[in-house]
Amino acid sequence: MPLSSSKRIRDITVNGSDGWEVFNKARKMIASGTHVVELSIGEHDIKTDKEIINAMNTSALNGNTGYAEMQGIHKLRELIAKRNQERTGDKTTAENIIITPGGQAGLFNAHMATCNEGDKALFIDPYYATYPGTIRSVGARAIPIKTQSTNGFQPTFEEINNSASGAKSLLINSPNNPTGIIYSKETLNSVADAVLKNNLWLISDEVYESQIWNGTHISPRSIDAIREQTIVIGSMSKSYAMTGFRCGWIIGPENIIEDMLNLATSTTYGMSGFIQDAAYFALTKGKAFEEKISTPFLRRYKLAKNIFQNDKFVKLIPGDGTMYVMLDIRETGLTGTAFANNLLDEKKIAVMPGESFGQAAAGHLRIAMTVSDDIFAQSLIEIKNFAANL
Ligand code: PLP
Image (cartoon, rainbow, N blue to C red; front, side):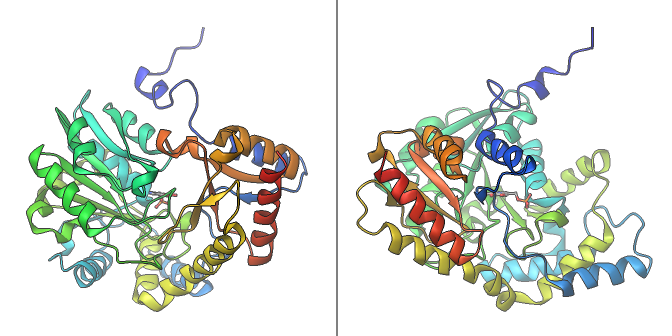
């Protein structure tokens, strides 16, 4: 009899589901030779810029292949601090920052550093599909706070406050995956009030902060009253099309960053120096480069808006940014899961069911705008016709 794995690791998924079933099914179909249009994963349709890869190569060839500074190389942390300060007004130094293997590891570290075993850790629904598993993997209890589509999926003070008793942390994500909305100033003030009232750590996942076409992104560390209890997660993945580099960061109060160093010592032992040099090089290219990466998503969002305008069965959720667009398909009478499975089987188009992102997104689909404009528009027309013919 093989020894069993720990309860904690088995509990990462509930009922064996992690929300990625349709995606995995599509990948199997592709592996067996079926042509599938993937509108599922948040992966750009362009490759990482060659100049960034050259910077990585040069660094490695120059011998930067040993252990790097555990907290992250100083010049990279300094640059991220400067960028954060310029964009948010939050006074930031290199000591407020630790470099992590992607935003995902940042999310794990932030919960590890704030929650004890069995603590309640809150997060806003709809949510990025990994959130509950990330929280459970540190032994905390993952508690979703359901928002309302009628309120544009913006959380209210009451919604947070009603679940907050005894909780340790609240995880928010704006610009939001899957909805594409950004939280308004009013929403962030309500979040701040709820966080203060309930003594919560606020963990703010801002990996889409450079992909915005409507409104302004507000980082909660720019709100004085909650700065010392707010931890920001950032990443090179989405802004610079560097998903495979696995390079992200955490911005937080110095004391918690210091504690996270102990976690790094006993887990990752820091990040590769040549990857960090590539990230540094990329970040020096600044906003113009970030805009180049985000422009196709705005273009495709506009295509989607036109295609579903006045449609009887599929309603587009007005988005403000990210690389996704949400469709409300409740008029078809199908769940998001059933719709996505049927669409994959019959039309060979892979989308993510809203249910993978929580109950608030049930009856919706998340469409990744990550194929060429032509294929994107053509696939959306197929989705539209598919819904009408059900
Ligand atoms: N947070 C959100 C909301 C995401 O959508 C993703 C990836 O899709 C991540 C974090 C993790 O990104 P990475 O680990 O590539 O930085």
